[in-house]
Image 1: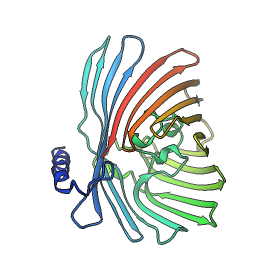
Image 2 (image 1 turned 180 degrees about the vertical axis):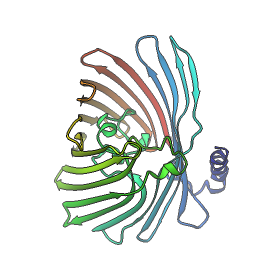
Image 3 (image 1 turned 30 degrees about the vertical axis):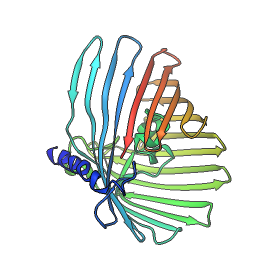
Length: 332
């Protein structure tokens, strides 16, 4: 923990020395090397509309990254839910100082046709999962499908091959535990604690429409329970509009429990700084015999590309549960 903050404070002390080169959100170049030091943080406020609310320092991350020729690398350390303060019927304050390895990888891309990545990286499945930083996402909350169907991160090998311009194939291979288990064996940084992951993907471009499908298998490390999943996603972008939808199904390898989830989202850009978002989501979990459908409406304001203020309202269609969420996030 102390080392993390020493590096963070060091990065702040370097800024004045490179003020003529530093661009907000693009990191600090370390001397004449191709290596950059950057990071991001996010502060959230949630009001549950029933006399309960909470403030959370959700993300605090430090990144070291760069590229040289066909080679690129990324090393990202993150503290998640570093500070959480709840108000209302139960007032509590919680701290977390665990530093996790979110992304650590090396990528080789000799041309536009082939890219190979080795390390821990965001599983290239769907669209939303490829935007790990709050600043880059449309809303503060993530669609449930990105947490319930497939592993968010893969520790292993990713091979991407483009066939002509419109067709792209992806192969994911993992045969080891998550990289973060080297530091947090009981609580690795992933939505599933896995030691196996195999996935095949296909992406197709057709004008303003992008379509992706994935099929895969993963095994949980402790229980050795295995799962198969299928995933489909589409994105349509035209002028000020962007429509996205993703749907996935996960089933136990023994043919038992099945979980499905999906969302459909529309975004309209009033201008370069202001965006309006609407999304509907569903989750159907056979194990707990529950089917959840809810919707949200959001507003995003970007005074700069690397700084964003977001607001969203969520409501469950069945229970009428509701929540208002605000966030402020910065990429530096």
